[in-house]
Image (cartoon, rainbow, N blue to C red):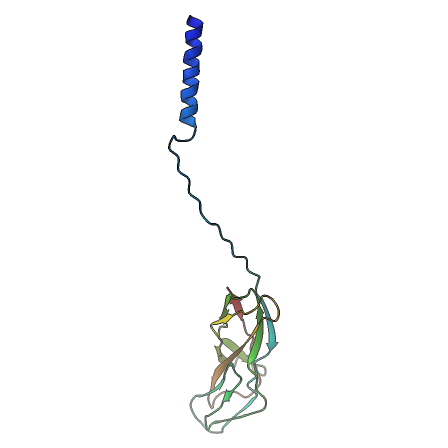
Length: 171
């Protein structure tokens, strides 16, 4: 009889151990949706450089005058102290990525250096779109332009001023 009792006690202990380690007696289950949005990497390609053309400064002493080139390529050279000539072009880029995504554009101001005297500089204040809506995935992408403005005065040294854009795009 002792052997039977010992087996019964072990069986009951094992049963309680399984119940304690197993799932709760009153379990509940819920489901959740899972989403993932895969996007194509952005590809940025330069199509055109920005060119203000030729700006001739009036003689004498005078204050600041600003020339502006819009994103559409329209030059504003309205100061009597400036004569603007030659072809002008807004910078143009193409961006490719995922359809219906919005790409953010960053184009900080540019320091332009006089090629005859590197100690002389001008600042190009950029005019870029904040965002571009992509209407296709990959080709053909979306074109966008960057313009800007430069302020000069009678003390601005003559010469060719050159700078480099640091354009960044991201989702």
